[in-house]
Amino acid sequence: MLTEAHRLAQSAIGRAVLAELGEDLLSDAVVDLALEARGKSDAVAARYYAAFRQAEGIADGFVLGEADPLAPATARERIADAANRFGQGPGEVVRVVLGGGRDRLARSLGADSRAIGWQRVCSSSCCSFCAMLAGRGAVYRSARAAGDGRGYHRSCACTVEPVFRRGTPLPARSQVFADLYDEAGSFDAFKVAFRERAEA
Ligand SMILES: [Zn+2]
Image (cartoon, protein in one colour):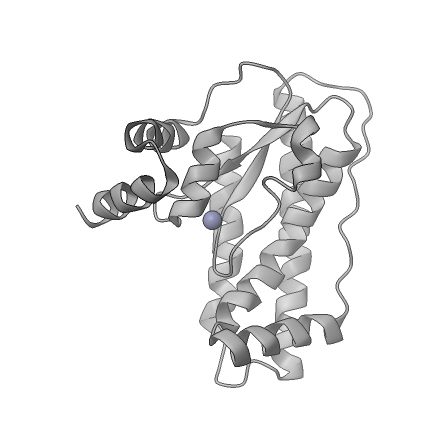
C-alpha cells in the first residue's frame, strides 16, 4: 500500500510538470520547473523509504542516502538530446523529475545494510519491459552489478520497493505480469501477450 501510494504520488508529480510544459522545453523556466519538481520527487521518496522501513519494523537510526544533485545545464542537455534525437523531450522532462526520487531510493538501498534487494513496481499501463522486470520480483543485491532495475524509460512512472525479507510476495499486479510471462515463455511472446492484454 505504501508503495502504491508512493508510485501514484510520483506519477502525479510528473504529470503536474507535463501539464505546465509549453512549446519551448529548453527555456530556463522549464529547467527550473523540472528541477524544482525533482526536489519534490526526492523528498517524497525519502519520506516513503523511511515510512516503509518503519512499517517493516526496522528501527535502527538508518540515515537515508542522498540523491545526486543535477546541474541545470545537464538537465537541459538531456532534454535537448531527447527532443532532437528522438522527439521525446517531454518524456525526458519526466525522467529528469522522477530521477530525484529514484536516485534517493537507489542511494538509500545502496546504503541500507538491512535491505536485501528491491523489486520494480509498475502501473497497469506500463511498457512490456517494465512489466517483465516487475514480474521477476526481487532483485537481490548480488545482482546489482548487472545494473538490474536501475534503468527507466522516458515517460515511465515505475518505481522500486525495497525488500527486507526473502520470500516477500510479489505485489498483485506484478504477479499478473509474472504469470503472463510464464505462460508466454519468452520476452518476445510476452510482449505480444502483454499488448493483447492491454488492448482487451
Ligand atoms: Zn516503467
